Length: 279
Image (cartoon, rainbow, N blue to C red):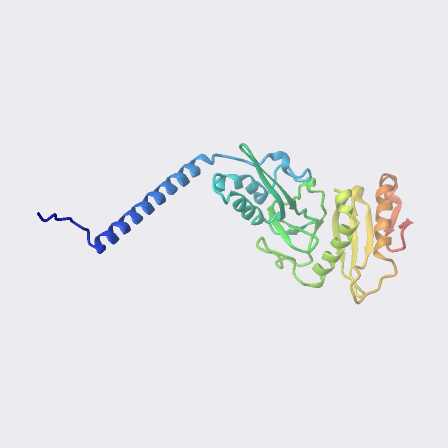
């Protein structure tokens, strides 16, 4: 008796294996999409704790600062790449210059980052450009008046139209170059950080021999900073002496404000002690 055994041809086994492979792939892809959708719905309205913002930031905050609160709601919290997503979002914000660490506990995301602080508010039509010591524009804020909580001076450029809301840095013109150097000197002495709101306004007086700069301070005190040194100009008074003279004025500010009606000029260009000329 002949026994007939049915054997599947090789091409049939090959097609069957392909079918199983494709079916498994479709199942895994569907499962992944389902999980991703669940993660997207589950991420909720997480927000960064308001206490993590620096104390010098005005309560009103700026649009870009408020946007930091929205970062947790834009990431997939259960994704293996959630930390990379947070870092990318943080570094995309103009206020953040470096991210040290990112962590998550329960339903809270925390991060340690370097937040740059503006040193001057440059006046332009419609508001102010918040500028750092390198002349980079951090953000434009609307309003005729700069919130005093920023603790930084204002600067009115000599020409209107050079800067706009879209400006990302100060121009290379001499006026702005000198402003940058002045800001860097004040930053080196940490004047604006240690004594916020003391310098209210920075003014430039064009002169034939070189521009003179004046610091308008609390109580209406006007301090002659003098010329801003460049590589081609050697000043009789060192920058260290100017900073020392400025700190002297800050320490004696209450006394000087009381006698300010009789003061003709306060110069920071005469050494570590300011020269005060009475009327």
